[in-house]
Image (cartoon, rainbow, N blue to C red):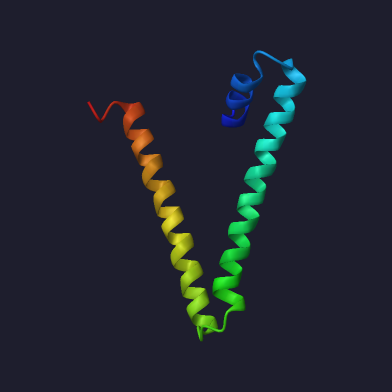
Length: 90
């Protein structure tokens, strides 16, 4: 069950039924997409559109560093779950 579905079920349990729940869920996904689009526009405005003097090498280093951080975080969380399932944390 998605977080939007849980919220929609709580809001629509008394009135509207399944169709109202589906509408609330769609509205939640649209709100999330809007927030992500606004965040993307802000990042673009701050990094690319503004004349901040960063070279292409600087942007490349920033992208590689950000992607490397995300990959490292995913790998470490994977190790946490792997360790927990194997019983090494007990």
